Image (tube, rainbow, N blue to C red):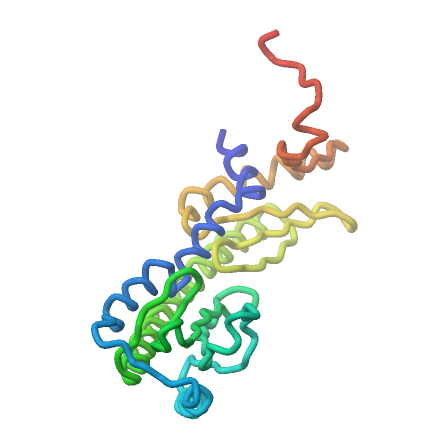
Length: 254
């Protein structure tokens, strides 16, 4: 059972998907709560068509240089909306993975009554005062900073766990005489053990379970090396594959 558990980690990416969602600052609920907090809509701000472009230019100047705020115009507008758009901006958040960034787009536009509104995805709200926008942005910036600080803490914990794992594997490698190297991402350490000049085995050790998985690594590596030495090679295949999932499986209880 121990060996099957650690081998299963090679295929297990559920932890990765969970952590991706936990890294996101701007969930749907976060934005919705910020909208409720800042945009009450009691006295909607009316902007004449003649002032729409001028108002947009003024806002873009104020947005420029704000931390975590971008103003490049990648947002797609419906044809009937283009003449009502004041401007758009986005909140940018560095991601812990793949050197990427997540972006949350916000559009400021006039409704049919020429009242200024802010829209995010399917949510919108009426704006009563220009300064409401900047108080909203301030909260967004604080949210990004909070999550960046959490990311730094998570990284330190991962590095500590990775060092502990590598130290343990080094000891095993020296005693059992095998070569290895490691890679890490945000959820796991990948352990590559050389089996020959041409092949290696890749084991995944989740940081969230490393204390229970690590004691089984030695036994697993030893067994895999023995099987490989006897000419038994194997790889994992997903049962979600159409060909494999629909194969005529021979049941053990038949």
